Length: 361
Image (cartoon, rainbow, N blue to C red; front, side):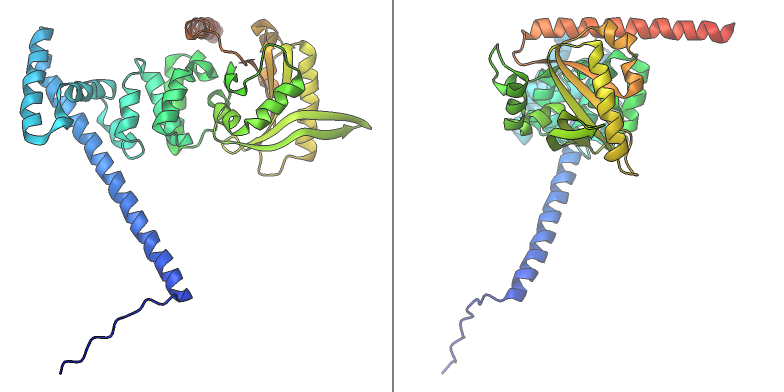
């Protein structure tokens, strides 16, 4: 008579918990690697398909002929491989190739970004803007949804970087290859969009501060993911007098403390002196050896660009930015930002011309 097999009953042993965790970690890591490899392979495939189709129809000047080729090809590929190669998908691949025609750049970006990220990026017309959003997505690990929100809020136009000549923009973006944001022109924005605070038309500085702290996670998303909250109403004592810094943050990329002063009204020259006092105190009492000098951000409901320029705030490590608790229409905001960019770039060009003349003399 055959001996019945003994049923093995699982017994919870602490040693197997460790074993299970170790094996689980290996499985999850392998899955992530496979997912990344699949994503990169698919992205490069779509780029190559876009390249091949574009080269084939490039010789024809008739747009209708190109559309007919894409339509016929999409039908053949759909019959063979399914809906992933329909007419709109092939058109997207062509646009993808046109937006990122440098194979080396796309090979690098495809290691970090998903195809869904690229679908959003190809809608951006300007190359510097596309590279900005691509590099910032990698540096700050934006999801597709957050990338879309950053683009909709015109983040690029709200950075100081956008106001520089295109050549300098590209140079600065190349430095982002390491994935760490270390340039203040990429970190600070103007204006800041604080409509998520839900403030009514009349509010006090305390209301503004309370609302920020209640929505601190959303506020940090608007500031940038490298900001870490440290303190509210940071008390400092100078010659027996008490002062309070509204908000104190630390920026990991810049490796420095960031003091934020909230102002309800228009920026005034006196605000500079107050912020300088805060920064010098932080530099003396809070700054560590491995850190850079503290930076100040004055957030106000209105500001004069001429005031900011004449006070040489940039040289003192102070940024002044406007904020909106209630958003204007996107058209008004867009027009205002584009106007500011044109003015800043014109000033930069005049400065460069003067510099060249002086060098020639």
